[in-house]
Length: 88
Image 1 (cartoon, rainbow, N blue to C red):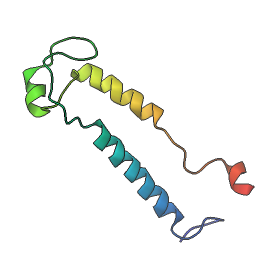
Image 2 (cartoon, helix red, strand yellow):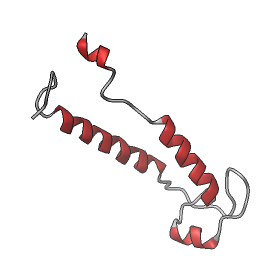
Image 3 (tube, rainbow, N blue to C red):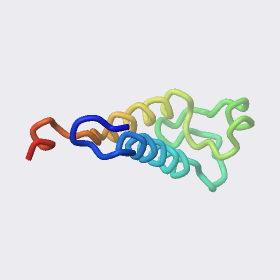
């Protein structure tokens, strides 16, 4: 049951779209390429444990964490819009 001006199922559609976007981002981040011994970003050696755990690893943990953090901030999307846009 939706409240206000939203139609029935609108909230579930927002949830489904958010999950779908997250799955697409995760699939896009997987690499089908072979891994490397050195990080593509900083040039440091990628630890053997990381290369074994993630065979396609092309970045070290620190650089990948930074890339993930930046991607998360860039992909923030407000599906609800502003209250003003809902009233028009």
